[in-house]
Image 1 (spheres, helix red, strand yellow):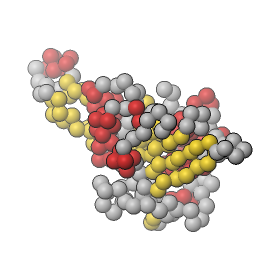
Image 2 (cartoon, rainbow, N blue to C red):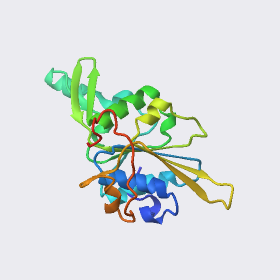
Image 3 (tube, one colour):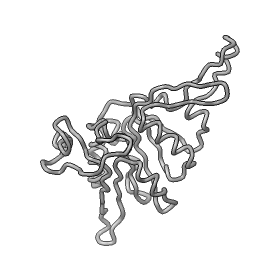
Length: 224
């Protein structure tokens, strides 16, 4: 998947989806927000918006395909290096490329639940731990996860949903064909001057529109 805007569409070219935009903007300016989920039906531009968000950061988007294997994703034995040196060596997985960048997963609700749990652990702790056969090691994974899903296909468990810092919902309204958007606040959007200030520093953010929510259990005070 290419990094940056898809088909040349910048972030601001997407009409509507205000709550989804706000969630992505919060994740961009606040290091304490590490996971964002965009939920919506087919054709609601959630995928285009998620990918275009990279254009605001200059970071690359690392795509995680649904058919990735555990070894490809997290890492495992580097056979070539092990044969060359005679010492078990670790080969980093796809998540190493997400370090310092944005990790993107489309249709995350269709991903293997065990793989999803491992990804969330890595993103929320900032570290990938590899324990496979003779290999035992770790590597950093300071990334922001942006995921999309269509709940009409299948849904995530309440536990999985609760691990996302921000969830933005969009659905097609029957009246006028307009989109209705609802934002589920999972945690505060924290700026340099305290909770609720980050949106004031986001282009298009308005005074007094800070998101309020509860801290993530892994963070204690909610500030990453």
